[in-house]
Length: 232
Image 1 (cartoon, rainbow, N blue to C red):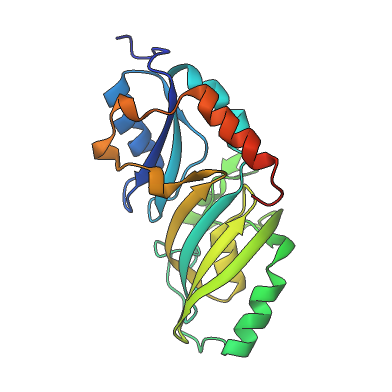
Image 2 (cartoon, helix red, strand yellow; image 1 turned 90 degrees about the vertical axis):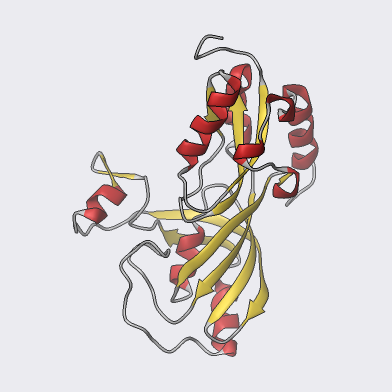
């Protein structure tokens, strides 16, 4: 089969483990199918959860999928920040976490339409260069602000030092930015859904077979149904 074959075509729901890059997972799936393979949004190496990977002809569906809402579960360490907003950055000094009342107020300010700076350790370009590369060299830049919609930000657990949140957000929202705004950093991050697609229906990369691909027509039908429901 040629390396950029258009078959098999379809969308794979893959549960990325913590550690490998999203592009490593894309390459792993490509080795199984032998087809051109793309994605509808990546996850940082420290994060786990749902990736929508597009095989063969289905790579043309990317514009229909990249703008879908996302859902995440994240544990935020409220006792210290990091340079990247995640466990991989330089750790700052420890601090007293906000009290429960103050945390509720901060969370309330992060619901709805919000504007937050993009994390310095991100792939956006600043002056033609990726921001994370500038950050690695210690170059300080003023990061642009991104408007996002936080449909829901629900507390699942709270210990005083950490808070676990279930977040339903618009595409392009940086969960690390939410963690930074709360005064901490993402200790863990897991994407649980992309639009109508759930990680419950995903398969680990090593368990993937071409038979797991969702047909293009079925994917589009699910997307259209989800878009007919406000906030879905």
